[in-house]
Structure formats: structure tokens, C-alpha cells
Length: 212
Image 1 (cartoon, one colour):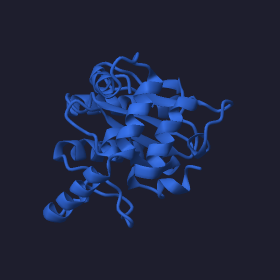
Image 2: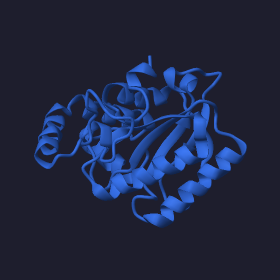
Image 3: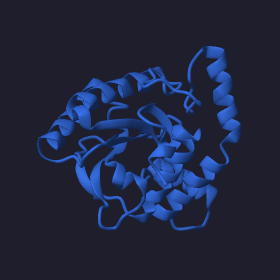
Image 4: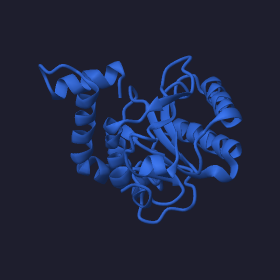
């Protein structure tokens, strides 16, 4: 939530206030809580075009091929999904969309926020293989491949904030970015909220089952 574009949107919504991470979170929460109209529009588009839209439906199949209204993003997400499944194997639990795609605030200046839930923490050869996956995705689609931003997180780490277990694998958007371990501190609770209330389930159990 640190892009220049997000900063501009936040500044427009909260004029005269210093842009901080917490203010970005306040902005995103405001957008999510005011997105009912946009959700209705997305549902109407889904009915008209036969697409699931960008919002979770009550009953989803194990994986959905069109989680968003944008074909190029759907193709990239399908590559991320299949690549992550191949790397993680039985450790793969689920994949979800977060952020603006989940809240109805997405535009072409946005990043593509995802969360992949893994049975165990990502380390060692698995970490390296996921880094190679993101490098391949950036070459496959230089625009959206470089706008992926997300976390690989265990069920225990996702369920609630635990200061003793707050370091998780993270990938930030931007050309040349690398997978890293990053603190998912109390400010990351905004992601838990968005996932639980608005998250788009591509595969796995409903996010409400994973988050307190």
C-alpha cells in the first residue's frame, strides 16, 4: 500500500494529512466499506458477461478461471496459481485476492494483491523456487507481472496477529523486486479484515474459516 498512485488517492480523500502506512490502511478500509455500489455494478457485469466478476460468490468451485473482469490479469493469476501449486505441492492451502481487486477500487494504476496460504512457512529451496516463479511471471507479462504484490503465509500467521510469529514471505510490486521475509505486524490486520469480509477466493476454503 505504498505506491505513489495510492498515495495520491489517499491524499485526495484526506487532504492536508501526512501520508503514512496507517493512513493508507484507513483509505483502503474506507473504500472497502463504501464499495456496495461497485459490488452491485460488478455483479451486474457478471450477469451480463457470464463472468464471476471480482467479488466472491457464495459457492465457488475449487478454482475459478475468471476471478477478475480483466482477461490479462486472469491469465497472470492462473500462471501464479499453477506455478505456486507446483512449487508448494501438498503445502498449498488456498489462494485469495486482496486489496483493490477485492474492494472494487481497482484501476490500471493499482497493484494486484494476493495471499497464498501454505501449510508450513516458506523457506529454503521452496523460497528460491517461488522467487524463480515471480521472475518468470515478470518476463511473461512485464506490466502486470511487475505489479503482483502479496504474501505466502501459514494458517497460524493468517488467523490473527502474533508478535512471536509475524515474519512471513512477502513479494512487493516493482521491477526487479525480490521475494523476502517481512514483518506482518498489527498494521497488516487491515489485510485480514479485507480478506475475511471481501476477499476473492481463487482456491481453498472460504477466508472466513481461516481468519478470526
